[in-house]
Amino acid sequence: MDSSQTSFEQLSILPRSFYEAPAVEVAPSLLGMLLVRADGDGVLAGRIVETEAYHQSDPASHSYTGPTARTESMFGPAGHAYVYFIYGMHYCFNVVCEAEGIGSAVLIRAVEPLVGVESMKTRRAAARKRTDLTNGPAKLAQAFEITRNKDNGKDLTSSDLRICTDDSRRIEADRIVRATRVGITKATDKEWRYYLRGCPFVSRL
DNA sequence: AGAGCGATTGCCT
DNA sequence: GGCAATCGCTCTG
Image (cartoon, rainbow, N blue to C red; front, side, top):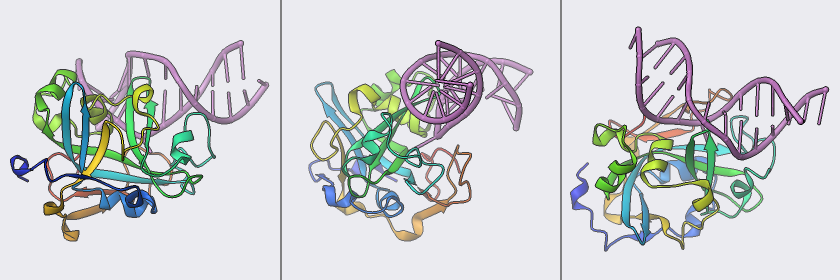
């Protein structure tokens, strides 16, 4: 897709009602939306191209065994961030879904880098190509400087970390691929991963 | 109190 | 394609 045509003056932040739905519905709806970090250091933006849904009834989900100190924000109100630390070195970013008290979220697995690419490169030393900048959950967290301390629990409708819509670019339903999730060992049969067909910024085909 | 593990990544063969 | 890195959280004793 041609990213240079994006007009950031037309962006509007997704309302909380967008997230107050089952994660399996929010996950494909998020494809094509823009993840934006806008703080004192400048603006970073990327188009969401790959997501995964997680739910309380799902053995692969962090919320499966009920709320803990680690997963508290996943049970919080919709439209907030759930950021977790994994493998001793990586952060992953989720958006919380459904009503407060229900452990439901969508993992953002990949975005197409659009704005602040040079800034992202300074944090992603291992990335040799633009497609390696944000094609994985921990990679995009590093590129957008998303950490648990800084961002866990943040309200995505009213903070420096936002998800916006760009109305002119609705994703056609036949461009969305549904597949099994990546990296999990339980409930591997569930097809709760969604990505844009043929998109080079997806973590894995 | 301590062992084991994980919604990953990058380097090596 | 295989595997080490690295540590907070969870579970067990």
